[in-house]
Length: 392
Ligand SMILES: Cc1cc2nc3c(=O)[nH]c(=O)nc-3n(C[C@H](O)[C@H](O)[C@H](O)COP(=O)(O)OP(=O)(O)OC[C@H]3O[C@@H](n4cnc5c(N)ncnc54)[C@H](O)[C@@H]3O)c2cc1C
Picture 1 (cartoon, rainbow, N blue to C red):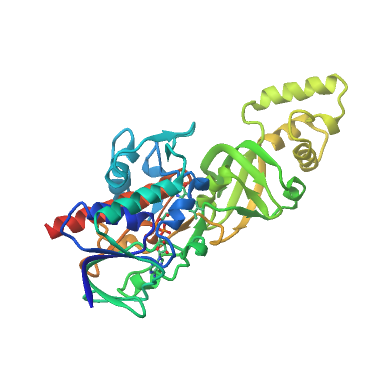
Picture 2 (picture 1 turned 90 degrees about the vertical axis):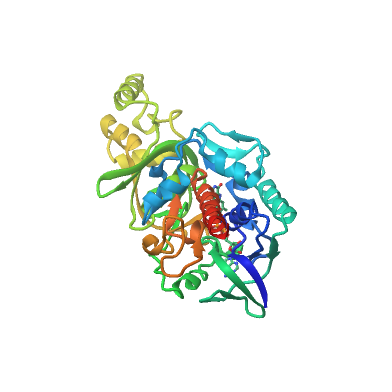
């Protein structure tokens, strides 16, 4: 049986980052096993193919986890450009650009070029990658069972991702590899995902994109708010603003509150609509030219009365009750995962020495905006550093 110092289960963002950082130690024998036909396949598809790898605002408020202290220590170091340090470790020297909202991308705006860099670096450092191979069991003492092949390892890193978008071979079956060592898995929810809304009002708006200010309200409390696009669909709502809020609303539902005219305070709108009325504009046309005609019609129907104050309130606080999501096959990330209870601050199992976890498989999820790739990369590097420190 072939023997390695480290076997990494999963050649995604976290597994590849971990392998590159591990391989800084030239004496170490590393195998990456991945179920897909290409390593880094999901990484290559991120950010609409552009690879949003981080954010200028790396504060911990953008993450959810059973242990935010560990996440903060690993993913939110107090430097101005938090993506720079971890990215320098795994990509080497590279140029980045950020968009108006602080999202960081490779200058190429090509996610697949990030995968190319990682794979090239791994090849140069002699790291072996075994594709089209699913790890089905890992036994104590680390025999990694891939069905028809078995390998031995001193260290194992579980970086097999979560349950989002099974076309990338992430169908959630890897959780059982952790459960076999006694690790609990917290409830799993799709996140960064389209929301289903229990409301016939949105049906006539199907296909319309509106730039709005949107809030996620749970139990009357605003949990998150963002300015961005809402796309109306036949099942509910999508768009970057909804993706951003969805992580708050996926577990227990809640309300999406839309302000269709965020740049205008209520008083200004009341004055404007009253002036239109005084010019002889009919109530049915009062929002024409201000909002998309179909949105205007829906708002007027919902306001339900020829009352300027009520119409303005409906424009500024249009509510939709969330009744579900489109599910894991459409989600960008999994909320929940291997419980942080039995994970050390270096991401080593407290139940089994030399077993480590990195990336989305853990109970850590970040907002839309580069936070999940940043967690994948930085957790992969943190694991590599701990293993290398033990090997030295
Ligand atoms: C369409 C899409 C767009 C996204 N865009 C962004 C973005 O722009 N910015 C951002 O921050 N995040 C984005 N994300 C989320 C981000 O891609 C993930 O959070 C991140 O890739 C997780 O990295 P990971 O290495 O933990 O898991 P993955 O990248 O999912 O990799 C896990 C790997 O493990 C392998 N695997 C699974 N089970 C086994 C097994 N038993 N044996 C062997 N191999 C196995 C799989 O083949 C897979 O390659 C996006 C996600 C999707 C789906």
